[in-house]
Amino acid sequence: MWTLSEVDSLRGQVMDEMRSSGSLRPNTERKVAELFRDFRAKNLPRNTLVSAMHTFGEAHFLESEGDIESRLHDPDRIIREMAASVLGLHWRSERHAGALSSCAVSTEEDEYVRVTAIAGLGSIFGGSRNVSILRLLMELLRSSTQEGIPGSAYQSILYVWHPPESWKETTFPFEKDLDENLLSTVATYIRDNQGQE
Image (cartoon, rainbow, N blue to C red; front, side, top):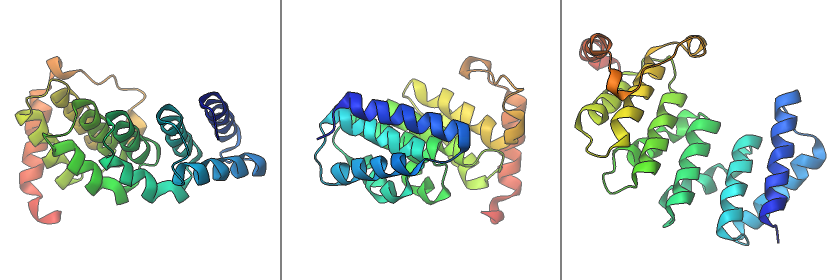
């Protein structure tokens, strides 16, 4: 059975290899696959399981995709939050947009899970000006009563609206500094492009 320190060490190795070459060495790939077998067999304690999910995200280990998405329904909030992070922030795959959208709009869901799902949508659709996603984010910005949701929705609107290459040069304002002119422009864009969803 894997210990938390072993999984954390593997994740560090994965991150180093991905950063330096964009891929994993065969031995590291084998270790990630072994970890996945234990993950799938439910042989990992909670903290180790969360670290394993993070490792799969960093490794872009897509074999774990269905298992990670199913964790969006886990009873443990930390596990659901990590699942949203891996799907939206690590993998940025549109295949998971529906699941992340469901998390984002669920008023029954924990605020931190919702914030992570919203950030994931911003990451997935960065620069796309996707009408459906912008509409959802605008609704969350204007209607949510949970404290962190409007700020996360606003940040994601900025990411979806602006092209990704501008993200590093731009310091996006926080919720208290809403650019109402930009939001008005986004609302007009949504209204004018409703049929293009």
